[in-house]
Length: 290
Ligand code: PHE
Ligand code: FE
Image 1 (cartoon, rainbow, N blue to C red):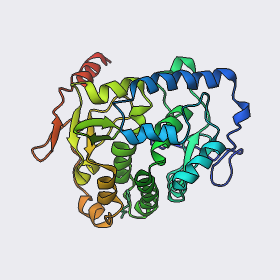
Image 2: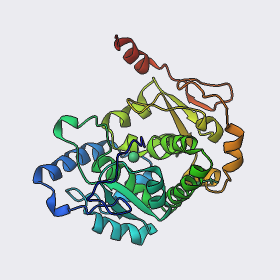
Image 3: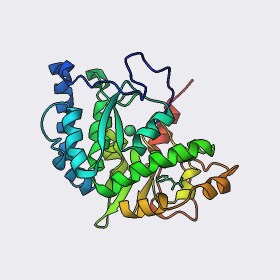
Image 4: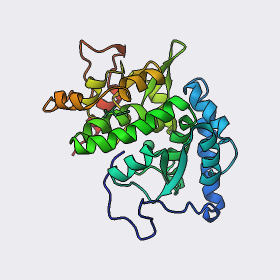
């Protein structure tokens, strides 16, 4: 959720949606989806939270080709009352929040090119749909996302968008969860990325710390590479309880003017699953010679 946006393109409606134009996809674009899908589907069992894998089944996303948003929305509507709608790219915060608050998930229609298979700047349909949509079939996570949208509209008025953006980043995009005594993946930015699906669970470099709302809201994040710190939730129900069922206004007030915590710091108060070596991040910095 990096939101630098230009004006609304002429093709987009007032709410920024566009037709997906599913018939307009070329065979090579469907083949790119299949290639990305096969690679993740092979790796994620045992690594992703079971609710994510169940979502792929419930929504029949295991069928080949880029999903048709209308069909996907029909299934999703039956499961949790959500829909998937196409947008041209990143949309303004208030538009994004408003869609979520109304149980609509906005997704890019375009798919990455072969040379971008491992890295891309802007979320494409694989990230948005494969990464985000399966968990929307889970009732608790579906409620979290809607509550987040409502919370976003509210945070806008409280000057707290950046605090709330950190929550999205460290849960919806890059969250880890405990399941059956193990750490598992659930963040969309991780499960849609081959490299980060391995790194986030197995690498000794990043910190893995227990979810702590105040702490997390003081922690910046990186948008250009693998995360240096991941936060681990106990369950979706616990996440919902700590966020949707908590009034953030006093929290925002309390945090106003609070200093940021260094991105790789581990504090005495942290619940530590992994105290990362940060070897990966440091090696990258060393190589970045001016
Ligand atoms: N409860 C939060 C508020 O009072 C909103 C929120 C809900 C934020 C769910 C994130 C997730 O603003
Ligand atoms: Fe995303």
